Amino acid sequence: MPDVKKYDIIIAGAGMSGLSLAWYLAKGGYKGKVLLTDKSFAPHNTKTWCFWTKDQPPFSEIIYRKWRKSYFSGLGFDSYLYMNEHCYYCIRENDFKEYVLSELRNHKNFTLLEESILDFSSNKSKAVLVTKDSHTYLADYIFQSIFSPSEQISYSIKYPLIQHFLGYEIKTNSPKFDAETFTIMDVDTSFKKGFAFMYVLPFRDNKALVEFTVFSPEPMKKKKYKKKIRKFLKKKLGLEKEDYKIIRKEYGEIPMNDQPAIPFYSSEKVINLGTMAGLTKPSTGYTFKRVQDFSKQLAESLIQTGKPESSAPSKFRYRYYDLLLLHILANSTEDSQRVFRDLFKNNSLDLLFDFLSEDTNFGQDLKVMSSVPYAPFLKAISKNLIP
Ligand SMILES: Cc1cc2nc3c(=O)[nH]c(=O)nc-3n(C[C@H](O)[C@H](O)[C@H](O)COP(=O)(O)OP(=O)(O)OC[C@H]3O[C@@H](n4cnc5c(N)ncnc54)[C@H](O)[C@@H]3O)c2cc1C
Image (cartoon, rainbow, N blue to C red; front, side, top):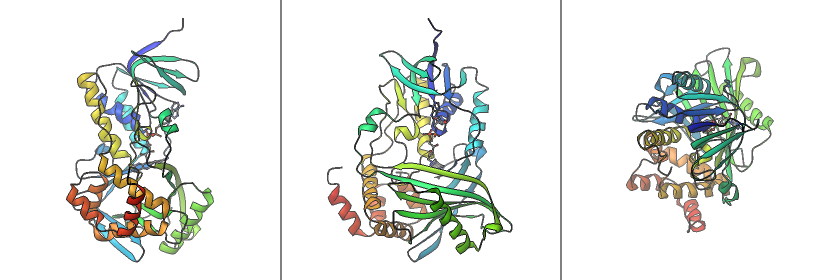
């Protein structure tokens, strides 16, 4: 009989959500035995996570950059947007991994295991993790951020959009960026196959991440994003190829769809985390802050009761607003451009961030919604009378 190792909790996948849960458990004084497992713990700096908050930011010690000033451009509206209450933060993936893993190594009840996971199963009392090398690990609960839950695969999505992007982190030969101002959207009205924009995070006056981003159903060939970035750098900043060096690339595809959040992978013993739990905000793709709030709540419940309790990621009305915006994004690039332009033109960034954080009252929702063209929303409502 092979030796089967037993734990109280297994965290399968040590990416953003797995590490976040492990962090809140460790910092909250969880006493059970935890196995944290991933196919690799090696650093690979492929992501920068940005988020906004009015409060003290999570992981404040490793915030790489922060901004209070933003820039929006699109359909004749070009403006600086100032935040009085919020701040926009950026954390680099490697800093996050290193910081969390070094903390976990100080906790004797946490075991880190580098192995590729094959699947999970469960019975009434235990959850089982099987690795590709046929090793088996048992726990009361598995928290996983690796595989799509089977229910999710069978759900028929009405608006199957993704946010796809390619970014170059570049270093220029001379100062070219205003390091105090990030570009939230520089809308590309020449792009017709989806809502597209450039997103720029200036880290220094000669260093920035410049990302071409599209909301549409399909990703594109890499050379198309590259062409857009090169063109933007030339047109907006006068930069020829020889004026900058590419020091890092970042590619992503983030789900933006109407799939309901699925809390469990296969049974209540195997619980989804992160993107697999539907924690990505459908209309924006932002995930980091929602994962922090969710993981904190989950860890507190495990510490206090031994049971994993957490609330649904979104209230009904916000899910409905997301659905309407997804309808517009999926059906008309022109309407999408007008809606985003008017959102930024007619509202403060603080109010928009509250709205997108699902932290507004109904009066504020009405203010935001009355700031955009009615016709696309009325069409979207007529197609989604039963959400
Ligand atoms: C390039 C990029 C940039 C992003 N930027 C932002 C941002 O600025 N703000 C924001 O809010 N969101 C952002 N997101 C969205 C989201 O925050 C990230 O995708 C985030 O990493 C999701 O966390 P996760 O834990 O669900 O998945 P991941 O972080 O991808 O973690 C999954 C883990 O599972 C492991 N794994 C996979 N298969 C196996 C296997 N078979 N066996 C063992 N381990 C396995 C992987 O190695 C990985 O560590 C970004 C996404 C991408 C792709």
